[in-house]
Length: 286
Image (cartoon, rainbow, N blue to C red; front, side, top):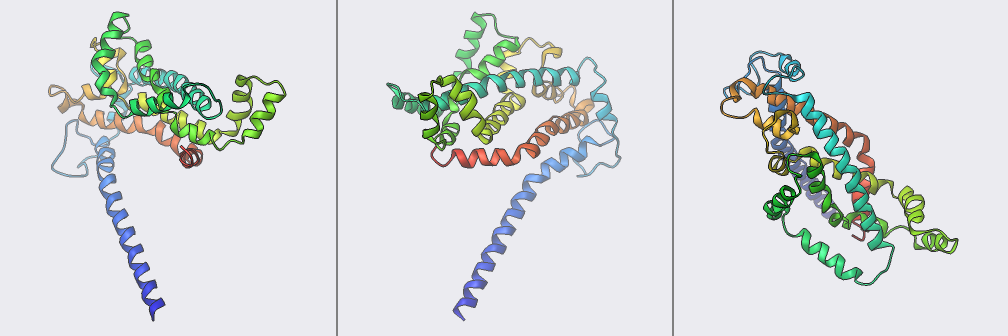
């Protein structure tokens, strides 16, 4: 009797748990479904009277690839992709190198530097926006992709903790044996540690790529000349929501939002296994 009651209680908890997850998933998916449906609307403006469009069309997807004075989506996409790839490459190297140095190597002031990095991460990056802008302006790096890439990449090494946690699981005996055989730290890092750390490399690459791909605030602050051809996707799509343009470009904005999400969704689906392994592996000791 007692066993049956315990099974019933467990079943009830499982049902409540799944119902709660279902409700949260529904709340999370509703805006996404609405955006997707609205992107196929035949009307150009915002429709708040019905959830689904009265007429369906793909013409605003086609218009996205027909640049005009307001919408230059193909150029925005290329700009964002170039910035994201450059940032991804630089940030990934910074994060992995800092993680390797703090995990495998031993040097004076190692722990104080690690603690300082953790403390600095507690402060939002937005607090430094004004200072960053004036520094870039001093060196004539505003309205340039080089300045934008530098801002995204400069402090990326501070986010080393998860990668360090993963590197902590790499057997020290292998690194010591390599040193005895005369390998340099660079060779150990690139030829031994990195090949054994594919999950955390994938996690770092995806995380580094997402920052510039989705960012609006820093891109808007740095690329402030108002030249449409130099916008990133986030700035360009936001421009479509201007009160003078929203009635003509809202559906196009929704279509652009859907297209922007496709590369990231594909990347996550392909790399999901390694991404999860990187998070869980890095959380063991990190």
